[in-house]
Image 1 (cartoon, rainbow, N blue to C red):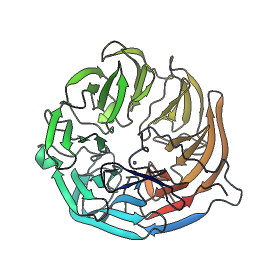
Image 2: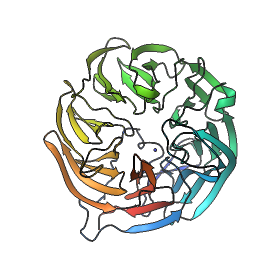
Image 3: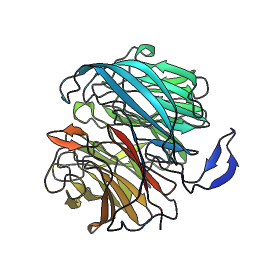
Image 4: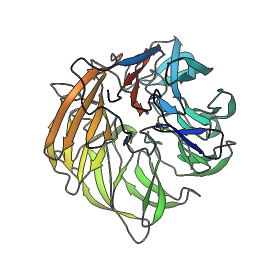
Length: 442
């Protein structure tokens, strides 16, 4: 779910085949430009002042788990306005709700709403707060996926509908119990989505027309992990982690290069598998995780290790980062942020400080973004934390309370939305407001 502000955005004076201007610092999709949680913009603070940060604006929004996306001076967000039904967070039961889903567009510098696209939508999902998938912005279009599988291609400037799909109807499937979550991926002329149904766990559409280009894979459930593209053996490979296995596909045709079994509990394949050189790591609920070695002569993967009860980390809500041979991420069983040796799975350290505070907490959450030699963490407590993550441990450099946790998980209040970092600013949302905070160096 991430994206930012544009007060001092620089015009890069380039056009990518459309009338869109390329702005420095765009965060146009889930986890940033490269889907890797890396933010490389200059002119950003290296400490959080004792008197806090400047909040540039706040605007009211409705509920959702989806993060904002930012491109060319605009912020895009999806939401759900409940009109009937009880929104109870019960992991074993689907809530039945009626309401309105929306895609909204705001001016990144002022928070002024520029347009919205709204449609009636009934929900039958668990944890029914609202849409899950961060919008994807590319080539003057915004691609938005609702919690029940309504896929929209909208004009990024006006909100006009270019094309749309009801994925449940089109592919004879039902929404997973926790809804459609995987943020759509633009790859060249293609829009790649995790759908479901027989032979259609992954589907590629022409991003301009919505015409299906290919479909691939069957599984017990489609899972929740966003699609990503890696390069190994000199070959671009599309990774789709369904509820049963990690799959490598030819992104142009959907041909399966290889599959490796990795089956988390409750179909909860959530994080995107992370590549580091010749290695690929993924993990999920039920202490299910593995490190694979990617073949260098042809597409393929072999197991290096599988996690044990007290090794590895088992990520759920957030995708880990891998740096210099160490995996940094949040374990879904303990809620602790951990550092784990990549090659062995040995746990180096753990701490609840940036997540649940002082105790264990199932599904404790902090979203990690790398900036230079430091990291910004957005905690489930609504705090923005600046820290250094090293093999030797966690060093907190400061924090600022950005937004109130308005949702609930296992008896504690949480905010579970990936923020956006762009143009020297942070965007974050809860179920009531969207907030912009300046991170510009004074």
